Length: 470
Ligand SMILES: [Fe+2]
Ligand SMILES: [Fe+2]
Image (cartoon, rainbow, N blue to C red; front, side, top):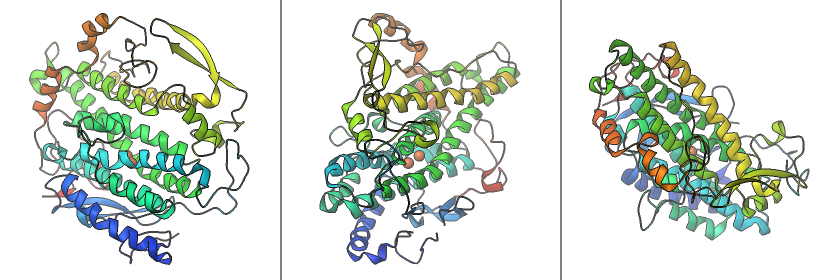
């Protein structure tokens, strides 16, 4: 299915057939570009960056690489092909035809799901907007900007749905998506993590590892939706999302590798003195971003989640592949309930535990992630195991938010938590140290001292390729 690049807004959904929609999107486009100029990566809009642009939705060869200026990036609307036979795969409507239009009774819920997802996309661009200035290499700078332009495209993907299916309300929501600002106390982004500052590259790599992986799981659940345009747009977004997590997990891995090299070269010394980040500090950053991202799945027991599942709006990740039964009726899910004093096992109806089901899959994927990082330390003969904190640790949302737990998930007193906090989460001193290392390294093929070079370049280019032309 080809993409029409001759139009103002590249797309594979035949926008020009609907004049009203085309006009509405063409009106939103300059507002989007204003937002990009104001809140996107600062000061690099005139530089040529080696970026990939979607040219087709085919699995093989869907993207084209070339040097472009970010404001000239062709943000477009791409959906995976329409399958006319497609049936709803779960919930009360299992087996019925998928919807091409929004069913009236689900309109508000669908709008809410789409707006919540949409809001995270520009938020992350805002959070990361200053990082270009301290990029540890041109390779990394290019990866940052690739992530940024694709998050911008994800906003387009969601705004298309709002404009094409939600009338005036949808257009208003699309405007507000350009008005909220990450971290702004009066007009913040919707979800907590997306208001946290990302001011250094270790945070960026943790964000793209853990927060983009939350994105992956939300998209997987929405890719199951009975509202077919949403499912199809999410499926294509997942193709792009994989690269964001690659940037994160290989980024953290390279920081670990560099730390191990410096430890090996300078045994018994404090590697901070040699400009590398100690493994214990890396673990604390992992603890912060993993725990914050776990919050994004919402309350453990949720009647909204049950409604979304029952109505066929939001399914489980890999609903067809991973489950034999898709109604999730008359089944329970055991939650370790926290009543403020102690934990006890409590069975709740499965549909009400859908947030927790998705969070469990997400957590397992995070744990898998540590295998790669622990291989890195092991290859240097260093005895250090990275771990993912227990889902109860350091929560701000859900039933564990008003308790205190160790990274292993054991309940402790507030006092004990505060006594140990500096061991578990980055201290101001840790943050100041990490920030002190963030000095730009803008020469092709050179890398800042706190991070190892990647094993290979992007799209078969060499590591010293001019990924960014400054
Ligand atoms: Fe995204
Ligand atoms: Fe992403």
